[in-house]
Amino acid sequence: MTADPMNFRLDLLAIGAHPDDVELMAGGTLLKMAQQGYKTGIVDLTSGERGTRGSAEIRLREAQAAAKILGLQVRENLGLPDAHLMLNEAGRLKIIQALRRLRPRLVMTHYWEDPHPDHRMASQLVTDACHLSGLAKLETGTPRFRPQKLIYFMLPQTRLTTPTFVVDITRQFQRRMKAVRAYKSQLYDAQSKELETRLSTPDFLDRVEVDLRLYGNLAQVKYAEAFVSREPLSMQDPVAFFRRVGPKRG
Image (cartoon, rainbow, N blue to C red; front, side, top):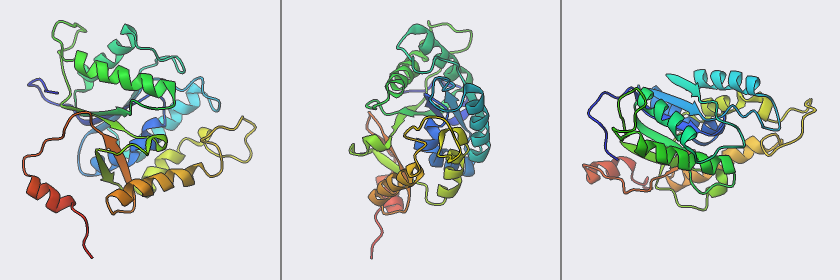
């Protein structure tokens, strides 16, 4: 992907189908980038209003609490219909408008092979929108813009897929998990009368940690998050790059 010659507003924008999706899959990377001085943001496509637990209002409050923990510059919700994301013009247009307004250098979203239909639809919608946003004749009232790069974050269910790269989030792990725990309505609560989901089982957060350890083990660090690129990654100085990230030697 190529970028138009204009200033970037955000360095990194993560786009998820529901509030809590990004925190669960890429929260540590967003936090790490914010700590390094980059401008970061999250766009949630839906409010999660059809989720088994909680409500749209509760999840929006939880999302704002998580945004503060992650040090985000921006958090927005596009209000698309939960459990009914579709590959249509209306959804693509809303994402295009967000991209042109926020002008992110790097965009990340769901991996395209995902068991959740909203996640699969989100992946395709964002992929389409990142390209279409650069078309000058697609008018939205704001200048055309195309991110420099689109990457995909990985769910535990996709862990058998080899990631293109992983990000060491060992130092960010505890705060990352604090952002996840901001979604109290979705997690285990012994006093709750709502129906149980995968997220609300007592061992869910333990399983999240296991997956982050698995990805970390790939890079010989304690915790990491994994990402996939559909395109080859280019680098200016491979010697310097691999000297910096190469395996530790005993």
